[in-house]
Image (cartoon, helix red, strand yellow):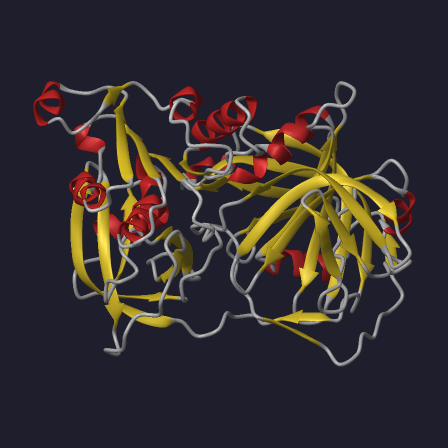
Length: 485
């Protein structure tokens, strides 16, 4: 199997993963000898990992290098980042009483039964890699999740697959790797039986696919299959085909907050109180949209106070965004949507250290919820609220920010407009012209222990993070949340 890229799932007993420090993971588990990565992982190789919790749709990706340990192996982490959960299909999990592992079958192409399984799949994992200049941080491998409605992966033939690349894929880890090294590994999981179907081959990117009639599909990855390894009942883990029951929420208010941005107030349809949430968390919702065979699942940050008797999500209309367009155009007061309880770990650190809350565009949603929380806090914790928008017409919920700042003597705001209009100067709705920079944040003198929380477009956050680190801010003092269609 040497020289090929593979993807797999590594499992163990509850608690088998440890993190002795911020740059190391230890895994106390044994890898099945039939796993195509068995020998490589134990020998010490570059590896890409996606840690994913299907029940809550949380995930994190990282890359590093493996090394053997007495109880299994460790991963020395090179880089790590979070991901939007938009295309993750939610599932509850459990363990089977026993693992009846069967002999793996290896072939050079897909069988009729394997084609049937792939054609019904709503999830796959994809591995890719690159090795450029020596010691570059981007060297190594990446593991990524892909999801969609059942059948989103198109089987062209027993040796060829077509995988859509949907809107929202702003990191380009996989696509970027494949442009430099076409070797690719795919993994399809049989959630009901614990079976794993490993596929390795070579990929090309179709930048102008015939599937482009669907506005959510930007590109397609074509995979020419070289080897298939089928491992029935390889895992003790099992997942439900359908997520747990959701709560019905009634839309009680629909408020236009800015150009292309609308807030929805949601209360339990059964008259009960809302499930409590922490500022910064998001609300997973499911929408029944005509023409879609399955519920469309999206997550939106909660933008209101946790003290409110209702949830508030604030949604920007995105070009090609099926969920946001449906909410804007079709969902009205009195309609009912389904939701899971609030989730997410992008929340306020509770250590009382200074806070710098930084957002752009509709990325203000979790930050505004956090501002609500700290404005009712009786501590003397310093708080700075930075936000960037194009102009006053695009600045949502600005009228809510000022009273919160005024209510907290330890809070201050800085609103940046990149292209202010004449009326913006009259209304004094902003403080500075231009875009927020790391130099602006460093000039605050917030101190070495300050927490910097960022939310906005990817380019915005990566630029600030890089600048803050160059200015001496420790990496673990910077947290960020991605958003977008």
